[in-house]
Image (cartoon, rainbow, N blue to C red):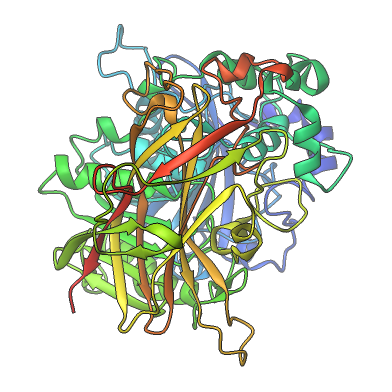
Length: 620
């Protein structure tokens, strides 16, 4: 394989202008620690269909030993480009660069300097129509095959890691793994962008996240070259105001995107969980996993809290002999690699959780499986317990030592583990107005902030369109571990509605600490009611008829301390985090501004209709 010097010469001017600002922003300085210890090479690796993928390889200058390869595949650019332009750091953490690995970074098909056509979460093709048909598994396989045969001084072992979209590609590599692939760590991986990651949660569209991301990422290209789409200019920092004035989703193209963003157009054409979305789900194909796997997630990841849990659980279920562990810390999206993890928003976690993870979990994992160094003492699940702020280890996830209980709604805003005894159809009601939707946060911002995942909910509790239920003061600690199952009995005067359920830790009112009275969001999740029976075949609600709406919420591992209270909020808007529901049964992506209407929502709390949140309480 020849190096791509001729290819680079065609883009030399562009690279010279961007090398200082793209990717890590590293300069090619002789004194840089990367350049002092590593030699950089750039290749165009040919895939089985002839498409060339741009790949940067950093090889240790010390050739006294053989090194494993550790690789990341990304749609976000492997910059800086050019054989003399070096990244500022290599690998998942500084320990890796100091230890010595062969580091590989690859632009995926159709992105930046790689050839081919990009597809959003390209689905796995279990039956290829020809030997040259490709998907992400074949691109990964072909890359590894080339690397182990052509990169000098490698020891024949390959590891992969990545955060977010690169984490998704790491998970894809597990579907049909190359024999040389020995250790993989999907970190904050996207599993399914309709059911619970990034763009949708239970059919509800995460508007500012999708809009702001795709306005830059989704810009068209004419061929290989740097893709650095500009950030969208909202003209204001007030996202609530901007998206409310934008109106329905159908206005985004005529007002802003002008039909130029292919991915946005695709999403707007596929509102339901159809054949566009279903093949993208990674976890459904994880059935022959052979590498060791360490899936990493953050309990407070605003983007991909569900993906790591789904990936881990699928591997565990379908690959009983696989070496498979789950790591969950108190982190925002990828923050174990770029923040110290001591706090998020107003909540403090008591220690540098990121350093603990990097030193005691991540580095030993790759050292053991790629270099045969150290001992493998990692448990099945290494999870942080928020509230008590301690790391816990378990032989399974969720833990087996739990008791299933339910938190029931009662009259006068009470919340209890005791089932209601009210006869009849007792309920609480509120009016949901999509022209004055309940906000998801109190701060002014145009995007989806990381901090909303632990925000103080007192701003929301006083609103008339939010129902609030809280327990008595807890006489002892209550630790909830695992999945939350919301089971609502609701009615609406319309024919569709969103219902958002929030689980909240209420700190005591002692007036001696800044956190006194804080209402910490522990988990919140929306459910679009028309999908209550089927994700792919929505059904309208019958006006004013009691309807059961069950749905799952992502796992937690949180201790509600003695002296605190447990609180639940129920509401029908979380704007602009979630797009507005017109509260009519229709294709929301094609709704007109005049379709949005007020609706009276009722949440029932009787013995006959016992709205509750099913939880797993850890036994002492």
